[in-house]
Length: 394
Ligand SMILES: Cc1ncc(COP(=O)(O)O)c(C=O)c1O
Image 1 (cartoon, rainbow, N blue to C red):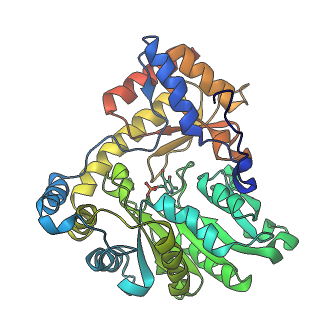
Image 2: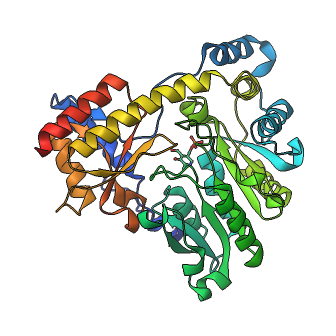
């Protein structure tokens, strides 16, 4: 600001919003690197591996065509929406109407945020998992809604206890978020739990929003289900999915929402005012990713599994308490005995070892006492990070 700059106050709806945690972490890491520190980042859930060549080829071939550079239809090309429906049928035996029950997103984060804008009024309650992906809370806050946390406790397998929700909040609740396989805990949910969730949503007149970007990153022969496999789920639920983690396409910004037709229509109308869709070659590559042979994912998941084992064993050797996750790209670890401030612990670790992990508190108050390690970093670097942490805690 120059001395003559006029101060413009931010809109009230964003005044209390803080920058996303990773924006401030990036700055700290840039400073450390400038001082010559060899920083190993195992904090962010961004896959280090590229998509398969045939997916990249599809993007390039499409980009070379003269007719793929204009605007694309709101919510995705018809071919992309059909590919989403095809994927849901092949993978989960869930039938979707491509035009009415699917919508393409500019990464699923966009849709997660916008769902709150199209569903919540000031005074409504959003039921949000704690710990949880921060966008559920930020989206609801900006919509002026009240957030009621659903604690995810280790003793409950990091599943919310629906019966423990306060009756008054429940009577004003309009939206409930779930996310399995879970970020940050790596927990999974059974079909039985999904059936209970659908029943609960029906009984309490809630829209159930299931965020499912990790359904195809599973280990030990586990296959994560879709919430939409519950009969009648579409009557009360939408599910978000993403190409970011399944196909290593995080930077491409391509995701989807599927399920309840009315809610998909609200998102579509809102987005038609907000954005102008995505680049046609990105949609074309998305079609290729979703409709081609999915066998390559097994080998990719085996690599994540190898990294998972390295991290689980390494953190245990360093005195942290860890359960072995069956899915997602995270290991959620309880801090060593005597440590209970996750920001202080992770900061000290970063400064003294150069290893960057994510403090659990970033994901909510019930994340305190934990840290999260991401598996989206080269295996040798993860191994080196574990050696540094073990040495540091000795
Ligand atoms: C639970 C969860 N939902 C959504 C996203 C966002 O994914 P996308 O890249 O599709 O926006 C992430 C990314 O880390 C995530 O962990």
